[in-house]
Image (tube, rainbow, N blue to C red; front, side, top):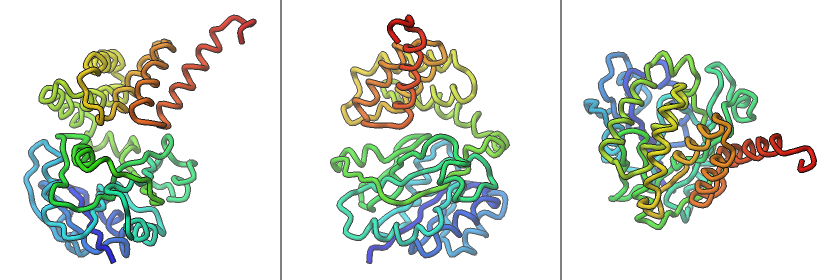
Length: 305
């Protein structure tokens, strides 16, 4: 039977980590936690749950500790979670079934953003206590010598996947994510940290639309719509130099959101078209396209409606 390693990075997560680790009981064969400088009981709690804990100083780079975790993992597959995430109940059998003879290199799990910290998993999965639709993310990864995360923030394995022929597949596994609950996010200062890291990443990779799209979305979330529009516009100018396997989803979504806020339905439709052509059906872009069509219908003369 294929072995699964949970890989996780954490710092000062004594409140959330136990729930995360409890959720994977029976679903994984080992746990590797890279601690990036905790001053609380995070390492102690991780060891108490049976995890191998590796210390690595934080250096403003999320990919580096994720890759450190990979170096210590021994499973055939890697399940990547954060402390503010947990497997939904009764997922162990689904996870095991997904890796049995899997033809893919990355299993795309459904991530559900909880609206409240106290929401039951069933409420989040049903949508009653969820922020937006679920998102498909590559979180179950075939361990290989070349597997690596890339990116100072919003790190990904897209380069690894591209080199292996983009062998991905959705799997019947659900994750609950608590990190978008506003009280939790604001209290941890994540927005300021993310904005600083994204601006730095954009400077390091000026010809890559991925960090620009992420920065624009973070600015939208922070209410800085004017700056978000400028960042998205800058990314739009470098579309012609993007490799064909690079996702445009974040940039297209950010551009569509700021255009919708300005009432520019044509720009929303253009952004949605570009993103959908490159990345396929995406709930956010389909929703934004629908909103733009509603704007056009409302503005049409009565005889044309």
